[in-house]
Image 1 (tube, one colour):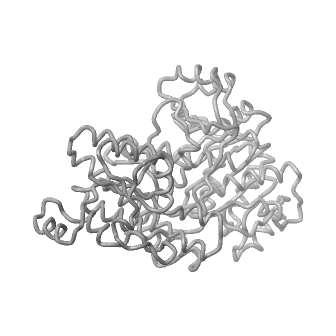
Image 2 (spheres, helix red, strand yellow):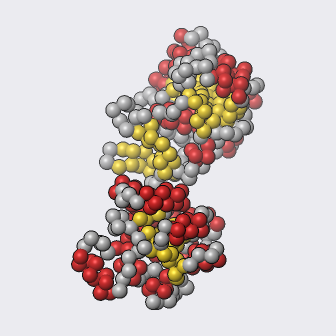
Length: 510
């Protein structure tokens, strides 16, 4: 029995090779892997001893040879294949253990195209695909985490087709994701990331109990290990819908960097938010906007939940609390709530991903775009369009309102007062409906909007929203501008003595 080993990531490979030898395998290897195994006392055959042909072209051609691929690909139970292999002097290779040139690390370390090209693996993917194709006769290993599992399988002497199928699937996933990474990089370099093909590859982290509804299947797939690094379950398993709300909530509070922000999210939209003097103060104020909708929602705490905050959180039902972290006292208190789920990022503050692109499923495909990021200078450099100038407090409130509006489903209007979201209307088919829905809800809850700041993620097409803002006492407004009726909007705010600022950047969220 023979095993071919050629790996870039050499962690654990010496121990694995020794285990294979103890199971009766002869080892074939190449380059650095060969040298490492040899220096650790293993008897190893060099690939060119099998091919009878020296590697050439600076190592570009090493394993692309019939004695290698024939030994992997011929079907052992096929008499014609076996006879041909014997006639050609090709011996079987029963295990192929390969991981590929570090292309991802290379493009992160350098922009030199010649270096990048040389780190595109050719022989490795070919051997992986060959062995995966012939998985009934060849065990293919592409993940170092499978070394121990493979040895256990070999020692059990059970020819489990399920094991081989799983290894085959992982192998094809490995080469597919590798090729996708290369294609995406080339498109980024030469086609501004919008080539004829777009490959979206995620690593599965876990299954959810179901999808959006019980009759649907669901799972979480991650980019760049973001969730592995930044998601720790302390209590409960997240559902499909939980993950969507957690993503929205974390994105909102992390936009405020090192500030004590607390957001409450329901169905992907904020129904509460505040920046207070402490996390406890922020939480208390976040409940002001819409305590009814907050019930059963997702709370994101941009910091560490202590016993005092945990006690307050336990007073009403939240499905999820995600925070930078929790003290032991906080966990003990919240564990008494049977249905609450607790997740942390094991850090002082919450962190959003660094994704550069976003996409959305539509019937028959998906639309793909560069990610919409709210730049701080949009607000700092916003242009005063009114006669009235905003006060420092109004500028602070407009900043919060603008960030919240930009991260809420369009059409959206937000109202913020003293760092607290006091009213919000979102996902409406007209902007004035969003404005009125927000103010009507505030009235029902006896929330005063007098002196509040208002934001919209896109321009106001008519002055009707400004008229509504005046009725409830709004004193400053921030919006992108760009309507053919901007002059009417400016005239309206000057009539009402309201400060108005344009950012000149729209943030639709559909």
